[in-house]
Length: 231
Length: 231
DNA sequence: GGCCCGCTTTTGTCTATACAAATAGATATA
DNA sequence: TATATCTATTTGTATAGACAAAAGCGGGCC
Image (cartoon, rainbow over all chains, first blue to last red; front, side, top):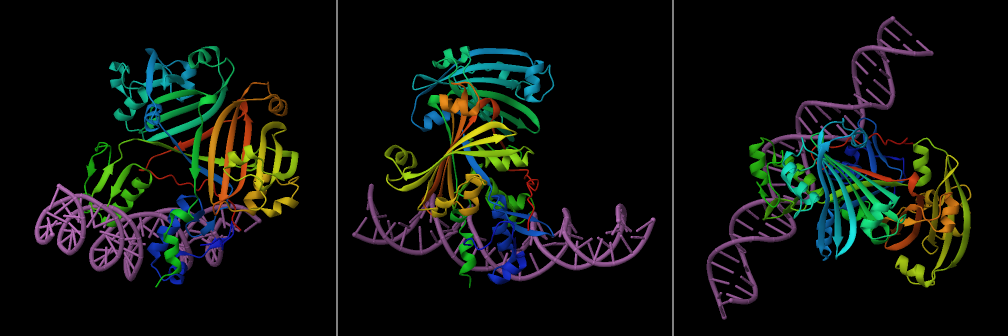
């Protein structure tokens, strides 16, 4: 439809729309459900469907594994494991992960190089009760993210994007100046409610950014047009 | 459907699945279509459905207008217009917007305060041919983002998230140290293929982050929490 | 070989019907 | 007045059946 309804306004019930556009209620329902999933309208049983106020900007970002991303873009990727240690989860890390301390974890630190230049530092915690196989994996050839994706199908993820100033160690590894702005992606993934891994990936701010596009409905929904010129 | 299929593998055709799970093909189709929409599987007519090989991490981020976000979180929001000037689009800005130079634009600079503390600097360009009404708007009471959303329903948006070091002017306005890491969100919105506005919003890195969650398929998320008062 | 043309498989979508689930609003009750 | 209960409305979901659209496959033909 071409903007003929205003935000907050209630739209006709499915049965009326079905009559109006001479199609079945199932068809209307499918179209409206799609709109609802994209946040264009809000629906409640018995109350009806309402045009959402267009204040939320929902952006879909494809956040990929570094090595995959580099390969797709035609760049060479390499990584070096800087630290690899099995230990008990300490209190501060446990709080970060919202897990209880004492669990056996594998702690990794890893430098990623794209076209020979340092591109990211990866600091990762792997819960060994969720991924016991990681105990015997060196990660020398396959980067941790790739290995984990192949091993464990995650079922939920949480992302945080932050800007931080490079501390001395980070600056040295990323070959940038101490204090320079860095972009940090924090990701925690779960499977069946259990934490699989928690990772902080820090990129030099002058060599990295996140991008996302979004088109709200209309273009991608040809369902719409079939309402108009219905038989 | 609990992880019993591997990437690249073909999954049974809809009719077989319907038989296997004792449900109608429509139900299977709906489920598989949902998986396809989330990128979990790939489907081709006559060829079949395949488990997607590359696990792309797709994250949905709700990037809101600052004032709206602050209000929702129960914080006080205020803004001050620092600059407001009508000018012709210069060459460097034109390149940034991928528009041709010379177009008449409104250039705004605006400081956002949350609970009295500086939270963001907004540097915005509004294309006046797309939004002629902006020429007579002072933006003193309604922040530009809110005003634009009410005026122009955007149809496409592009986002970039960057980390940058605060330059002296930015640092002074945000009451932070020069060189401190800042998180910059760049957003360009279009309507019917024409640029409406381009904005860079710079937050102090120690006071701001972006967060996003994602659950792939399976359990749907009933998202009625963000219910808004409908008229 | 290479090209064109149907055949067939598989997904895509619509229809009509049915019943379930949530809940706004009305009604009864304390 | 406030609270509990009922009811009617609206969305949510499932079903079987039908046909459309894309595309892989093979046959026939040059």
